Length: 237
Figure (spheres, rainbow, N blue to C red):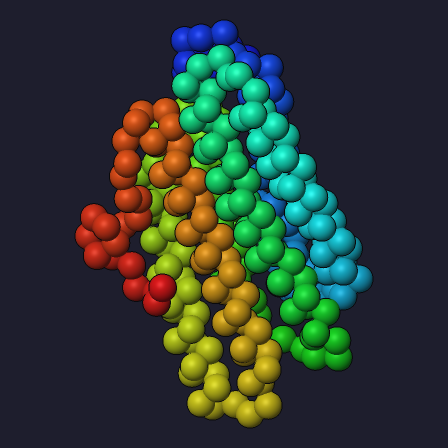
């Protein structure tokens, strides 16, 4: 994050450690969100070697989370400059775990890909890559809101998350139709359902991050998601 942004948000001299933590959080976001897209490509191609490489890379995300938590706890043990510093550090600790869960979803998709050795897709993949893109977009918006206090796309975030719910629901219905009409696709169909759910959950994590960003920068506790406004969510939770 640019140091000038922190000065605008908090109107205080920024803590150098806070700036370092924000940069590390951005790095974690890039790894977690980017891995969703990368692992979906591996699954589309049923590329086991690619999937294994992604899983290995995501182990770094876990280590980054643990190291960041330890550093932030150490910082908490020392005197912080402002209450805003304390709020930001505790928020960063929570968000780092949201990003770790996103990385775990990507890792699970990689493991599913490894289980597909010798198998073929029974349909062209459309919904799953789209769900991965939706998840990444929601994460991009929420982390931008957190790090830059930019809430201009919150409405778009809620729409994208609702679209992920609808797409997941429609995909489940499509798979059910395939299962009624074709044999010997049960295992792959189950994998499709699991991967779709992981992508949807990643979008849910993005909403949680955005809610924490709203509280951090505006002091507002607000439930985000179209279902809270219109009861619009179709997919089961």
